[in-house]
Image 1 (cartoon, rainbow, N blue to C red):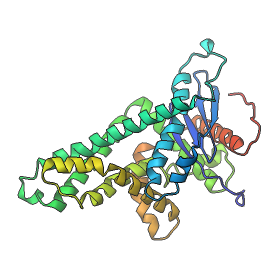
Image 2 (spheres, rainbow, N blue to C red; image 1 turned 180 degrees about the horizontal axis):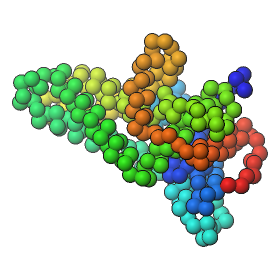
Image 3 (cartoon, one colour; image 1 turned 90 degrees about the horizontal axis):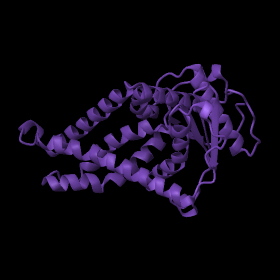
Image 4 (spheres, one colour; image 1 turned 120 degrees about the vertical axis):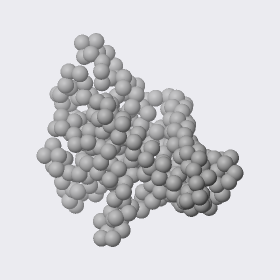
Length: 313
């Protein structure tokens, strides 16, 4: 198993389930009300010019974000539509796997706009709050104001993640997030994908989107150092205009930390992101691990062109 060539794989947590995606295929699995596991798979929609942009440093981060939202939208819809349906009222048809391309693109665009809108609020609010302290001599300098703004942003992020983690639904999603990481770590370690092996694997992973979000906070502090903080409108506009730059650089930092995660000294660069995952992941139970394994194996068979395996529960 250790000599087996690994296929690059990523994933995300769903409502009562997990999704995995590789170069050309994606698949998800959810736990139904009756305890059974239902799967859904579809080819990734690969647009040639988009794939070309993924080779351009700093620009590929924005493209990766778009693709993640685009390819994940169908699986999120599948999970939200199916997990709480009473099996006695079930419909035999599964979600259409060959989706209208225009519809998928539109859903992805809406997802990107929603993400950017959230990021705008997340960037503008700390800037406004920090500006309120400019009359305080000890907090009025350019460097201090940027550090204060970054600190406020970090507090808002941690508070938000902590508060939503207290809700039962999000807590379970975070458990499935942990199961997703455990399966990928088990796979990348070369061990057989079994419940016991997955359970012993780490729930933290260097390529996680949670790490990416944290990196945008730190990268933003550095990027915004090069623009003035006065007048206020310039400060706010710069936070909006430079958002693509922050996203692009943060993606490169994420890739760098993953590339050197085994390095004796450079591995420390990824530790802050891993620490944040202590909030965004939870230890999954064995039933959740089984769902993640089913999703992974469905994806792997599809990626390798192997036939499906019929299973119960």
